[in-house]
Length: 344
Length: 200
Image (tube, rainbow over all chains, first blue to last red; front, side, top):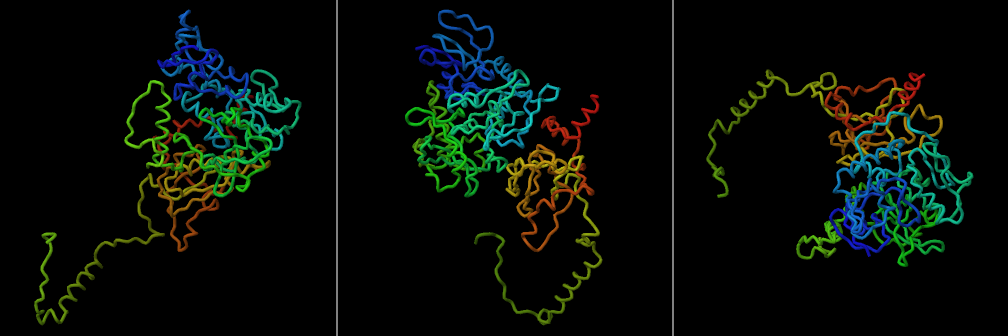
């Protein structure tokens, strides 16, 4: 076990845990944002540098600070390590620089993009970015391209996080998807121009942090904040069948996997990741195909929560979840029966 | 007694003059006739118009860009900003060959404002990232049917030969505010061409 202090909060984690995972155990704003790291995908992370943190003390044995910000997703904790994330102004400044780099070639066509409202890059740019770009050259441009019959690739928006490539490598059987060329001209492409017909290829849409890979069956149908997410499941022979349906009125506009608070697909009961198959995602768009479990809890800070009223109980639960995640044990009295979800 | 202003009803017998009602009628007529010589409270509307404030917010317009293409990209931000939930829209993908009609890859195939719901607050104009929707100094005319107040694209989008002037409300302060919204990415097709021409 290693004792690590992140933003003045000390936590004990098993050896080999990354700083980012340790920060996620603490939770809240202390967890660094991640664009390329995806805990459910092996060897992901280390490309985007948004999760950089300042290491003030390397370990108890060698207390020297690390010379420059380190990628917290790829750096493991040491006993006695002291890390600063949001309590270090220069770290936040460095992160703003990273965001500026990520947005160099990004077209900022959020009004058109289907991902707007649930886009990791949008959230990141709003929270950590600068107001204006200093880049004055033409942005790289690619023609939008179809990857198979269901997925649209808009390479302009891609930030080359490699998540989709890892999905194609690890979830699907054969490698059908990769990055060709290098540097500024590098692009995601179907491997040797093969259309993706694997059963789990649709998960690339869910892992994409930006709007580069989007669902063609949902293309321009609605905006994310006008749809109503509902958790549902079905008995699927291929996958776990645990999905989120996005309703507009009576119509299921889109089916996605269930994402947790870090924007990653949730786990099944047995600990495996609840990836969903293409049948569930693209073909089952009738209410009668599904067993509805109930409305999804939407974070009230999300734009998707617009016009969704969950009552006071949800806000209280939200507050308690945030306070409860802090090991300091901040004591806040919310009043008698505040924990009871039936108490409005 | 609840208030000190209540009066006791007096049922006294009316005099002969009061019973004849003529003095009361004449005094009433005097008031009526005196109004002939006073200033009229009404105006003859379509010919004559009341002065309006320079920042008056009236009927909306969906602007076209310099090349005549519709600016609206159906992003839905006006609808989500609208406190009266008066705006609805349906988006569609631009097909090849329609580049002169719609500026962006996506456009609004249906765009409706319910003028009975609209409170003319101008938040849609503020929310618009594409400088597409503006409130103008035009009045929304009254009609007899409720359905007539739901304005579709035919009533909202300006025609190419008759552009609606929206510059009155775009004062220095407003323009500074809009500059603050950072629209530098939002360059029109013509701008792009011009920069290419200048480079060569």
